[in-house]
Length: 273
Image (cartoon, rainbow, N blue to C red; front, side):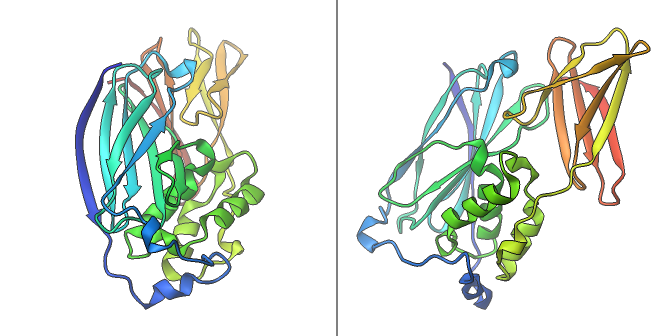
């Protein structure tokens, strides 16, 4: 395995405002981590499994983001081969963190982006393995961290349970924009956690063409087409404001499917970079 670190950035959260206290609704934490467990100045280890077999033909760059206790940190790590697992050591701030939140997003070398993976935990936990179940919720928590809300103020376990109740085994359907807006304003109730409608978009191509696309969602992996009158048809669920990427490595194709804020679907095929 060869790993190449491409660089790191740091985004410090702005000073918390009065709205931060409003997050103590039904998703507020009930306790504070004792200071001696905060682990100031220490490191965490993030471990990401290699991607499933359909993604193996490509190299991948992992975008790792994490809350270190005072800021959202960001680092890109390039991997030669998508099947290779990643293990990287990342620093916490000198003050430590009451709650660590991590996301890992894969960027295949041919272009496009996979759905985010996520994890969180409180000290003394030091090892994190991001997964699809936590991806969108963890991304939302990091977004509000930019607004000055310490993730430790959010009861993430209850948040995750409610997301599972609403979205079931399809975490990608979570309306992240709605959740981020609620967390950012402090108007956080279970009604802020909603599943996005995902009407189907039909894509068709004439023969000859591969009838299988590899999905940006690793829990979905493959989308199979149906043949009719020398054309292959795929029905791809896509929500308003969502953009999805799908690949055909053997045919050197990237399919981008999206739906704008007015509800109009679009799709375009481009060669892999």
